[in-house]
Structure formats: structure tokens, C-alpha cells
Image (cartoon, rainbow, N blue to C red; front, side):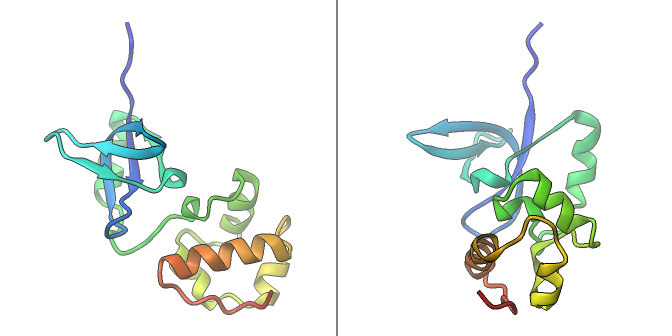
Length: 128
């Protein structure tokens, strides 16, 4: 029996979390919701969820963006997470000292983080 997986992702229009079925059309990624609505999403934010996890995402903060939005490797995302950070908004207070403590982050990764934070209108306090 085939299983269809639900996903959650961050919508590009307002940065809100949406849940549904992920589809790639003409190089862009969408979530189809159960009501048939198609929403353009950030590809790096698409994460599969199981039925028992769906309730967990219903309580997901609508004004926060998960670290997966950075588009970095799972290794670096986990290393940042080990510092206690869960959301992009928490990086606003980070300085070069904080970034230097994370294994795998050098000037190129800091530049990438800065670009993503600016995309979400979050201040970057480090230097590149």
C-alpha cells in the first residue's frame, strides 16, 4: 500500500507555516492544502510530518521561522541548535563570537546566514 506523506513548510508570501502535500511544478515548490489551495513555499523549509506530529505543528509559532530556513547542512543546523537556538529570530542577538563557536561556520556560511536573515527582515549582528 502506498503512503502519501504530509509536509509542513514556510509560505513565501507571509512566512507563515502551512501543512499539506508537497509538489514541484516548473522548478517551484508548493504545498497543496486539503481545501485545494496551492501555496508557494521555501524549498529548504519543506519537512515531512507524520499524522501524530501534525498536532505539534498546529501549535508552531506563526511569527517564527525554523532554522531549516537557513538552507544549510543538517550538521550545521544541528550545531546551531546545540546552542539553544530554535528559530531564525533568535540569531538576531548573535555576534561574531557566537558564530565562531559553531563548528562549520566560516565567512561563506556567515554570508549565507546574513542573506537569509535579511530575507526575513531579521538583523544580522556579525561581520563578514
